[in-house]
Image (cartoon, rainbow, N blue to C red; front, top):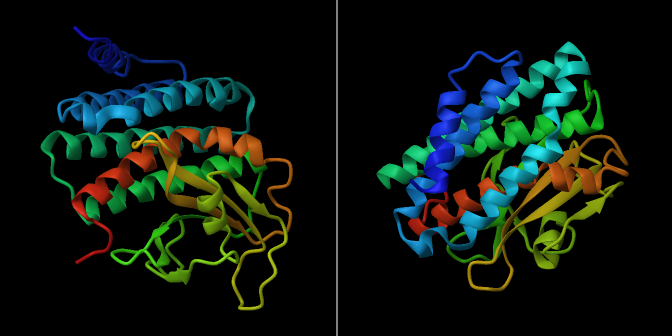
Length: 267
């Protein structure tokens, strides 16, 4: 039996055991779903797995060691313990849904949108846990890609906060921090965004979603995090990049399937 299958079964068995901390159980369930994605994708052939396989495995292990959620659960406030458990559950649900799509080779705009919603909401919770209590502060995590089919504009494909417009398009210019990150293949941060159009944010931190499928880096899109507080991400940029690595790797896989099946907007 291959290593992924052994690990998948081991995590499946572990997820049914009563642990002292609920977060251990939900993380086990999440990784069981994650391994399911890898096994299913491997059936599509090497081209379907390729660098995504390695990137996701690295991201999963990085997430395990960097997140430190298991230790924090012993000491953190009850609110943040609950948030940690909720994030783990969201990861498990999103990965299980994605694994099912891959197994059946059936993808829809709606199903991928729902999976992304879970990921973006979990990312927002991760950001809040790094920054501390953000009560009363507007914080949003957004998925931005090139609009299709022309790719001349950028489009907000999904958001953690659905109180703002989806599928809004923007020109590709340097006033878009997400576009700067996509061009540079590295994160970009503006701590005091100058604008007078009534938007609710002042700080913008953007991370590119980079593919190496053709042997060279290519930005598929960006995760843009907005805050209503100027300087909100000061000193946290590198830590947030590490903490969000796992989620961004999963989002890269989703965008790969959006691209393959041309699933960008609802029909």
